[in-house]
Image (cartoon, helix red, strand yellow):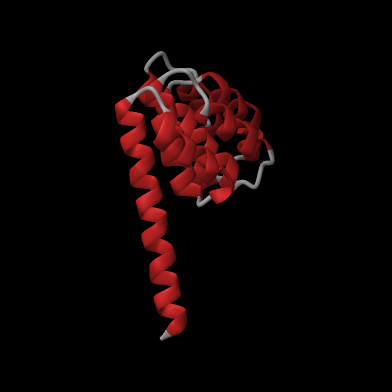
Length: 136
């Protein structure tokens, strides 16, 4: 079976973990023909699929990834919001840091608020390290 046919089959597998793992594989292979599938998964996949697809779209420099990330950060499901923050950290897309700050203060889910606070602390530490490295 040709590799692209296998990839196509795995991207529509009934097991979400298999689909999410296949999306991770696409990140290293940069298969541009699968961008429409990545966009679709970034919209309607499980939380891990969506976050992985967003990360791959970012690495492929696809403009849609910012919209997908924003939408996922505002998803009604807490696990999707947490996975979106993971994708934000993975891509270093700090344009959405204000949204993370809002989530740290106002989100109705305690796990989401804690995760958002952790992201903010990690970014603050990263900035501190950068300043220390440039000053010394």
